Structure formats: structure tokens, C-alpha cells
Image 1 (cartoon, rainbow, N blue to C red):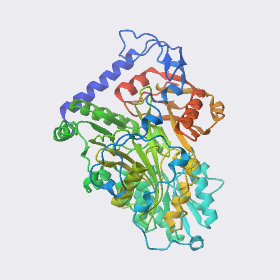
Image 2 (image 1 turned 90 degrees about the vertical axis):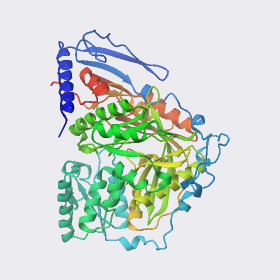
Image 3 (image 1 turned 60 degrees about the vertical axis):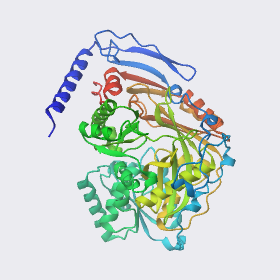
Length: 596
């Protein structure tokens, strides 16, 4: 039962919002606001605030139109590979990475070219399997069930269809009915199972698993896979209910749920990080009193218990009151997000819960990283480390750009891969794709979280540009127990960068996409939102991406230059809802819809 104080707080919040909305019922009309791109910054001409409106809201019409340049909000002010090259502690060997402190700092290491990056060698440290892999002919005629597609990521179904055809597999697709258009020409009607796969409540999951079980009584299904972490829980339920070969719930739920992941990792001393799942303000305060301000545990991170694409993450929290404030805002934001129509196809379509944990400290000269992996019978078959950077005017937006492969030293990369392999072993993920977010700390590598299945967004494309490897194909072959080739050499460097909106509103028009595609070195440009779609201003460290580009080159500087030149070509005309903008920036609330 909610406390009287909690009820009163929510009542006051609703009253405040009502007053805000009443104060904004201005006469209809549009105010054009132009922005001019400058040196890594966008300047805006915005009307002065009348004293009667809350800070953050402009006078006049509720809706304003802005011409927004992408480039200023997609390049951090920190920036360059020479600054991110390792200049501090590194691992002397892979074996040392899982226990004990790092050696003393070494001299700075120059940036690597794609050829010098080569192939990480830590795969040799993974446990070996004595079982012989199957031959392609051994799986001919078997049936593979794949869960889920997404229109904005067509490579998943395209690759699955191609691989199934080459191996002689029967491909059956489990997907929501409205996604049928994604596969109408490549998957036959009798191979399509319609189900509400994005409804993540236990009752619906059980119903879908029973539906698959009934189908399996009429036709044998040998394997089940998915390539979006959003569907990890469902795959586990299907495996448990049917006995079909795949990843069981005990693994998918541990990997997907950040609280379960941390609990499992904390059984290994070198991975221990203080954490707690919090549901009330009192629990937040208890956690801070236990760990705050003592020893090195001075900063914390608060995040959604389930998550994707660096959303709903708040960093650098250094006081009890800031921690409580972050919890209150995130709780409201997550509940509001679950009600949005556009959240139906994301992991946030139900309230996921919140965890708080100690914020990890990067070893000097290193950056946060991720490891794309394919494992088979517990052995690492593919591993690529990527560097993660922030975007925004101050580089404050977490995960806004990634560098493939990492520009850190081979020793650091080997240590990160070895720790990632150990983490997968801990949670029990032995076959298929995974993405591990990880950081080199002064005490060695620390895993941040584990994402079962393929890395999200267009990470598949970045990996393929660098290595030629199809993570979808390798993931299927790993799951089926088929032989996999040796890892190829990495041949280029990719700067993968997202665009974040500076304001909340509705996109009216986007220009410059074809010009962006024509920039030398640019291999990928994709809009993730278009005219009529809403965009939201960032909140703290989180943002919603609405466009993405990949620049390539023999060095990080060349790749980054290409991606930033491409982003500079893209312009979005946004009708700004001042109410939405205020609610998003200051209260983390979903705005009322624009009147028709």
C-alpha cells in the first residue's frame, strides 16, 4: 500500500502539471525557430521566457517549428583516438585478467590501424569442446524456428532465409501478425505462426509457448533461435515448454535481467559490484547508507532492470538526495514509457523495474567497451571488442557512438574477451550470439551487463563491414552445432554514430539523406524515424536515436571524419511541442498528444 506521503507527492505532481498545461493554452499559430550549425554546436533563436511560465517553456503557441542540424548533437567534445588510446594499466596476460590488480601503468600506446588491430587472441582461453562439429549435410531437412523480425533491421530475416536455404533447413517464423509484411515474399503462409510476441507478461508467454508446442505435435521443430534480446524471455519459455533445442529460461532470464545478471556475476569475487533492485525511496536510502561515501564506492548508476540502446540510465550520482531524485524520475518515466504506442516493439512495453549499483571506474586511458561474441559448446568462436563513446555537446549521452574494432591495446582487448567468456560461462550461455558490455577498471575487467543473442541496432552491419562475418549465420551455425571457420582478419575501422534530437516534437521533414550517403567512406545511413514520428529530447544520459550512420577508414580519425561529414548533411524540421519538451526534459513524463 502506498504511503500517505507518496500519495500526496503524486497528487501535487498532477496538480503542477495541470497548472502548467493551463498556462500554455495560448492562441493557435506557429513560431518559426531557425538553428544554424556551427563548429560542433547548434545555436538557436528562441523567444525569451515570460516570467509567468515555468523555466524551460517559451511563450506564444504551444507548437514551434525548428530546423535542426544533426551534427552538433552527435559529436562529443572529447574525441579523438589519440586521447582514447590506452595510456594506463594493461593486462600482462589473459590469465591475469580474472584475478588480482592490474600491473603498473605503461607508456601510451599509439592508435592502431585496422590491419594492426588484427584478430583478438583470447579465444584460445575459452574452454575447449571435445565433440566433433556436425557437417552441413547432417542438418538438411531439419526445422529451425526463428522468433521475431523488425522492419528497420531487414538483415535478420534476409540472412536467416539465405542460411536456411543454403543448409537445406525448413525455416518457420514466429512473429506478430502485423509484421507479416516483412516476410510475405520469403516465408510461406504455412511456415508463419502469428502470435503477440512483444507481450512480455507470463500469461501471454505461456500461451505462445503452448501454441508452439501444439504446432510441434504436427511437425517436428528441431531448433529455436532469436536475434533480438527483446525476445530472449520468450525463447526460454518455448525451450522449457517444448524441449526444442535452444537457450532455456534459466539462461535467458539471467542474461536479460540486470539484477539477476549481477547476482550471478557477484558469485565470482573479481566481478563483485554492490547493487540492489529498488522499489521504494526507502530502499534507495538504505542502499546509499550501506555503500555511499565509504571507500571507493562514492558514485552510483541507476538504470532500468531491463534495457536496450543505453536508454534509462543515469550516471555519476554522488549523493543520497540525488539518488532518490533519480529513482523518482526514472520510476515515473518508465511507467509513462510503457504506455506509449511506440514502446510496443521494445523491451519497455511493460514496467521493468529499477536497479542501482556502484558506478564502475575506468582504468586510466581506457574507455567503456562491448564484446560481440559467438560461442559454441562454451568455446569462443568469434569475438570483436568495440569502444563506446558519448555524444552530445559535452559527450554526456551514453552509448551514442561506437568504434569497431576497439582501438585499445591487444592486451586490454584480450583481457576483456576472457572476462566476457567467463561471464557467459557463469550465466550458462554456451551456444549462439551474445553482446557483453564491459569496462577495464583499476581492479581488472568488470562486466556491466550481458545481452543474450545478437547485439542490437545495426551492430551486425558494423561487424560485417570490419570482418566480413555474418553474425546471424555464425549464430545459427553455432546453435546447430555446425563447424565454423577461423576468425578472419579485421580489414577496416567503423565509426558508428547515432543522431539524438535536442528537442521533443514531431518530425515535419528530413533532408540531406542522399547527400550523406554520397560522402566518401560512408557505408551506412539509416533513418529510424521519419515525417509524422515523434522525437524526444535527451534526459540526463539517455536519448532516443532517430538516425544512424557508419563511416569507415583505415584509421579511427578517417572513419570518424566520414561519419560526422555525413551527419552534417542531414537536417530535420521538427514541430516542437513545448509541453512535451518541458515534461521530457524536467519531469521525464510522456506529454499529452498534439491536438488534431
